[in-house]
Amino acid sequence: MELLTPEEIGRLTPPERLALIAQLWDSLENEQLPLTESQKAELDRRLASLDDDRRGGVTWPALKAELQERCP
Image 1 (spheres, one colour):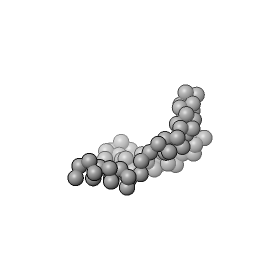
Image 2: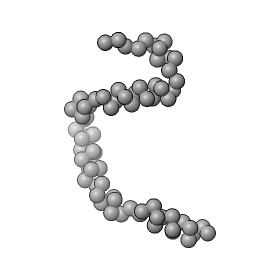
Image 3: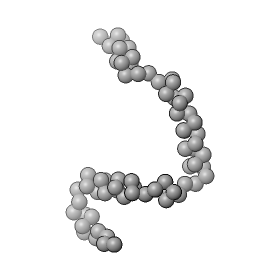
């Protein structure tokens, strides 16, 4: 495998470097991403609360109408 040298990386623009980071991250499988037990617990907590959070949300049309009413 041929890696980029520090000089080659330095010639990339910041958006190109970010795109490279995203490609590398996306290439990993879930099983390859080590999580601590506390991270796993936090992810489980967030997933469990997702449906509740959606029910309490406001749709864009409703929010837009409310804002137009308050700030004509």
